[in-house]
Image (cartoon, rainbow, N blue to C red):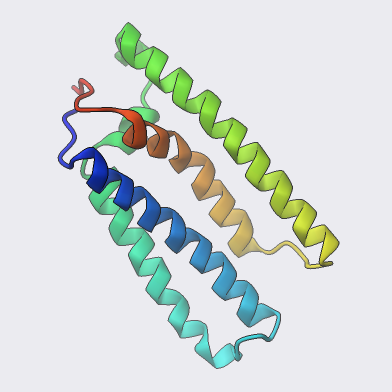
Length: 143
């Protein structure tokens, strides 16, 4: 796969994607806990739209999402090493983020909700793509 964007633009895309995911969770929690009135729930669509657009532009169109979910039978040795490295890094980061969030929720006595669970599920699947997009210089072969 040939990256369509420079490393700097890919990094901006990753930051936008991650921040919009965090905004979705925080905005929902602020509404759920009453900090923001419930009538503003429609505004949740803004970070969701940003998340969707950034996913399409930086992960969907480049094929990096498909690359990180491809069978190892279809990868060469360098690509296998790259995906293994990205998975090892990603799930280490995911574990720290998830356990930290659960500790914060427990300490603040906040009930875990489906928005958080779905966001964590999305994060688990996109983190390897974040890693590869952030670190790779130019190309990955794609068939």
